[in-house]
Length: 297
Image (cartoon, rainbow, N blue to C red; front, side, top):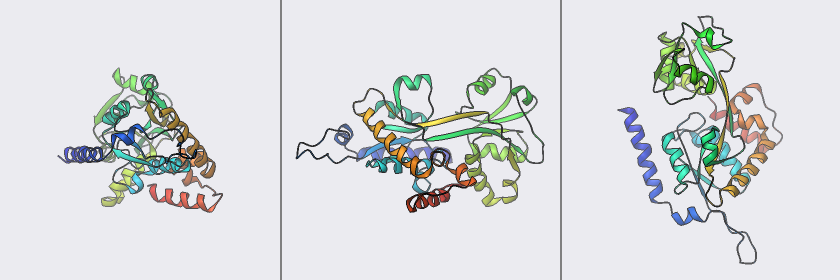
């Protein structure tokens, strides 16, 4: 019931936002210079859609999450204002492909099919997936065959990279799927599964939530540093829609400027970079770094 209500609220919010959005604005966001004295026409707001992916993207977080904050700042560097709405991931991709209500979507990895349909920006976010396990139980692995006899929790709809996805599909690993990341972490704490593949910052976000009610349990897990999969996420726009190539170029220009200000890895691997220490080059950089720290779990 909670999950249904959550999806209903997201969909209702989507309907409300589209009801007040002018289609004329959508069709004229990127245009030539004004004929009035050759001055550039004011850039109109761009609209993007994304799924819930805390702490990187969330309708319920400050600044809508770490990556949304950074994407907005990158566009701002290029003199462009954007607005981000939230829908379930599958609908986000459909809406991005239509290119009518939204110009594009955020935080997508490249696949052969997507590259046929979308333009991809430079890298917005880099991530690794690792195995979480209970601290009290020693765990080491080098190859997937080392996982024989382990019960692995998985999250429905998530990819763990082509190799692990294929192994799971063939039934060569014992996996138990569930709908939510936090449910898998709770199952791992309780011992009903042995391993759970997840990105460390995302796990830390949910463990912090668990720790609000049960701080002891939240500290029972650790992770193996060997990556299961490494992937890069991008901003995407419909490949055939006029003006989208210019939007990508605008974003890439702003993103490059932001990476020069904060450091490339601070933008694409924000929480990991900040945990290791990052030196700021200016007062502007200090402001951004302090704010990103607040957004990291």
